[in-house]
Image (cartoon, rainbow, N blue to C red; front, side, top):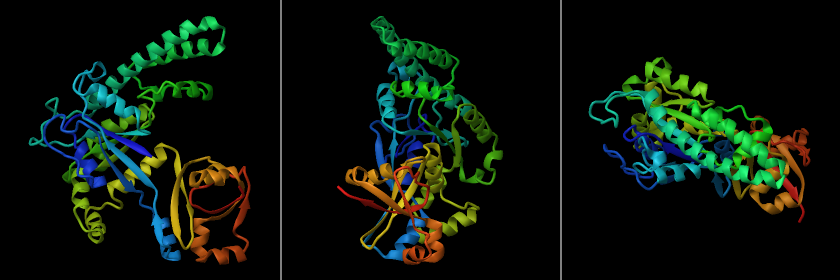
Length: 364
């Protein structure tokens, strides 16, 4: 999973990125501090994998990972190449989803590129630039498809008509992800690689002082309202707090979060929200050599899940020996699960569930 962290200059984007990745990206109080994207790979926190590691004491425990990409700050005119526009847009095309950091705190010591704090304006600035870029992309695709209609292939007429409808939708200032695509239409739309069709998580960045307000913060309410209208999600997070957490020894972090009245770190909540956004889940493989978490799309069938481990597993798939994580935890060993008949043998049509512990049988 590759997440692009975007936002206007000086909204706390790179500070948040540093905190959640410890990648050491430069954060400073001036526009375009980030030019080339910084990347950081982080482990996905998962209590279930921690338990399996304690149960089996394998040589190694391998968590799932998320790659975060800190993309340059954007300004008006990026779709026309202003600022670092072209680079910014090309970097967004390469990620699976967008984490859009929105400034929801006042601080006279941190300059805002537009002079004052307005989440609605800030979101609109970035969204409009992405919409303009998508309109340009679609206009070119539509012109190309129109020329190919004379070949007699029905698909070009369908593509032309759909592109025209989506352009009209974009002209209303609405992102492509809020367009009501049919199943057939979304397959066509995926070939366009639109920027505004990507799933978006708005990270409403608040100060430590505002943490107690939560979503009653009027600035947060504006972000939530926008997100609800465009099929996006909102996460309230404090880059300032995450920065402090990152600097602490791991054993002190829980106590610090408890003192603030926060159950889980922003990183955990961000990853959890991103999994939901991208319709992802995890299954586990266990053994003396290795316990590992694997990330797959919800709805993935057993052979394709096996293929995440190795293509030979998918090609020679025989069956999957499956026990739910909760069942294994309750009984405490795979042997007891087998004795009680709770390890199921599943075939090619089995849809893997979140938390499944699986042994794949295959023959190549």
